[in-house]
Image (tube, rainbow, N blue to C red; front, side, top):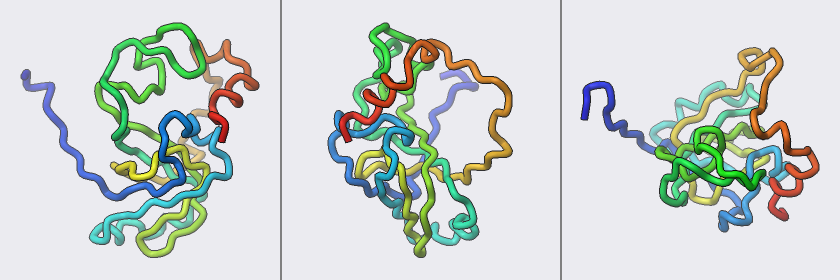
Length: 163
């Protein structure tokens, strides 16, 4: 392996507890999981790292897509019927199966974060948590690539997966 490409090792900082147990019935993205509650249980030795997080309304959760299938470079995304490059999608079948969701933080009770708009499977390993800070977001027009052709109605119907 060349010097610029190295294996990277992460450890889980906690675990997601959610009502979702079946990947095919789990909403795609927090936007389509409105009102679904869950929690993140942080490892006890990391609880001090949660200090001051309760001041934020939303958190970014980075997690391992632990039940993703094998990596594929071309996938058919849930909002399309055309094969797309995996890096132009949010498909879980990635070379590095990492997921990211911005969820509402309802409250913190010690090492437990109560969250809402949960689109993660029960038992999902959490890699990291960061506060969502609106001022750091993109504030210019955004292009959405092939997704600009998907209507909001289609996205809502397909994204909620009947939840």
